Image (cartoon, rainbow, N blue to C red; front, side, top):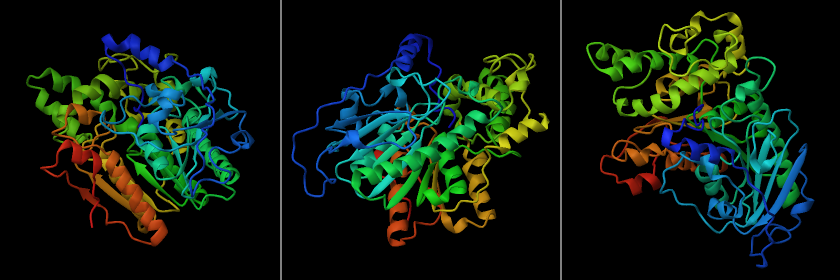
Length: 476
């Protein structure tokens, strides 16, 4: 979600992390490759006419002809930012190669300036990638947490480009740990995320038509965490723009709860007592389980306490309920319960009605208008599955849209795939499960092949790390 935030660095890493997060890229425009176009290539051959492509509504754009659109080439060419996707995928995830084409970077008009990529200091940045070998489809994505437009590059962009899709992503209109400063009223910054993905989808569809001389035959939305929330919202509110979507552990916002402001504060109250041991530890652990953090996930709690829970609660509470701590901004880190305006004591149910109204502005309903596949790990302790996707699946069914939804609970999956490297014997990555869901959606849309029934996908007890990184069968 949320805290595909840039994690709070450990002291020894802090200086390097700050440098990485602030580094900007200088996008050189490489010389077009001299290789002749292959059969099935886009009209006009390799990278024909990139400077004639206009992104509708963009205030600035820069096009480049690249020999490689995946991270196998864009890291070296300066057309991505590794700091933007650090910590989101397993270290052994391979990047596909052999995808030449056009990349367009730019931004739409905006008044905020949290995104420093390219030295532009301008939000509403986007990236659009147009492979020479196009399969007729377009994939659009919003980023997880508060990251910038390249955050999905290894997890999503690389793979869909290798399958021939055009790809577009947005920074959602504000980035970083002070994203909540954007907008005039509570909820504005998050509401902008939704409008920015809508804006990008419309623009990218027009760009595809310019490049390939026909509109996309299929437009799919996908994203993880906050990006998954955007997929849900788009299919509820703008189904006319999409053929379907893949929701990877999307954030659930509901005015009456559950939402992150209902299940994060208990971690700030109870985890320190649990971690301290002693006679109160057992009761604190039970309170954590009651708040939605499943038994068996305890080994993940120390990391999430250090990196995610406190920071996530404070900055999202500041976005939606800035009055809680008065003139202070985003509370006091790791404040002990009982101290003034401490987020460990935050009680959403007791907050004024205007807080619920702010959440209502960004809330989900379950009324999806196009096919949606959701995947979520059972050991997610940032967005606990019982407080998030389990609830959203029930919402979809209550809205009468269950026939449009498939939901796969992935046993031993957690919120951040990079943690699989630390716990290979306990966790499984969700990257291959997302790819299985994607191909299942393709079959659903193209051939009316119904995906497997919603279910819990077991972690094979004898599977090794290599197999888990490349396969995730969803069922029969």
